[in-house]
Image 1: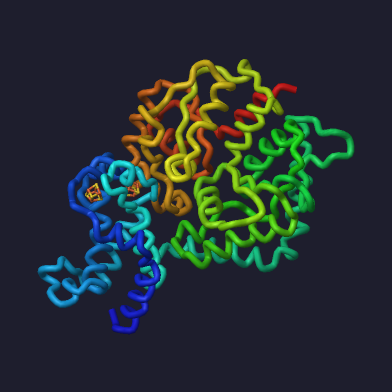
Image 2: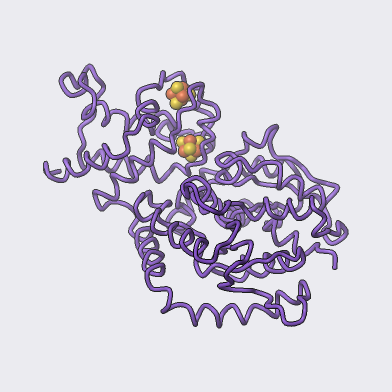
Length: 417
Ligand code: SF4
Ligand code: SF4
């Protein structure tokens, strides 16, 4: 690696060194408590998948270039040179970590390995060694934000075609749009994913609850966050923030996409609107009596997979359980406490990489499969697109015999007219 490339990468490294990051990089005592916490290590048993081992690759670079002892006495300071081989190790560490933060729950110091891996991802971008497809997808989202006029008509035509299916689930009042778009003064802006499955059930529930809502022109998914590019993450996020401000909504409701919700919740900053997940909104409608559910519409036992980015990393634990109480008398928990739930193995951009990561995703989520099977449940509900895809892949691969469902579509199917 030439000096200029190395210097550029070290500048990127430096840009991530805030107080919290320095604490994470300087604190690990190698106590080993996190060893069994990572689903990848627990499933595959290879040392390179221990959380502290992954972090150590970044930590040694930090020691070499940002700490006196590593600079002057590398052998004593456990320092590591930034070379092409180090970049390969960073790739292996970062793209086998789903950012689930289960290791952080176990670590006595709360060391955030996901955050340390964000340095690795940024260095990979700087070295042009990140998965290219994630950058392409992030660039497409950014471009769409710049030239929405080009996409508007096609989007509106597509939405019109979905309205009949929404009305089938919930009859709207005469003259009311089943899927309102671009409504200034709406109370709630709903940010969906591309695809009818993310729009139809949500629209039916909003209409049943009498919500004054409008659909966003933009998709919720943030590929900038998957690839670990802070500036693209912000640009993709800003499209929605600007739309919410323009329409003067009171809240932005993020669909069943864990990363989109966490990014929106944690990076939006102070705004004149609140950020909520669709699961929180559904629980609120039920608590306020704005919708009612008919348990007889769903049969058999149900278990629930907490999406890491919505539950452990953003605190939404109670709401899905409240909803499930209204859907079934046979709900089965997966773990003794939801914060210890195993990751599905699909986060961190791994599902977005599709077939390329399929073999690894199946091998690294074996403990998740055991956890699901132990419940004996027939239906496996979740509230995240990534998790839904990964859990469906696991069901096919391991023949679990469960039906994987979105929680929102279960609510829509059980709506009482
Ligand atoms: S539990 Fe925390 S302190 Fe212990 S080895 Fe893991 S990261 Fe380091
Ligand atoms: S964040 Fe999750 S995947 Fe990454 S090291 Fe920690 S437990 Fe493993």
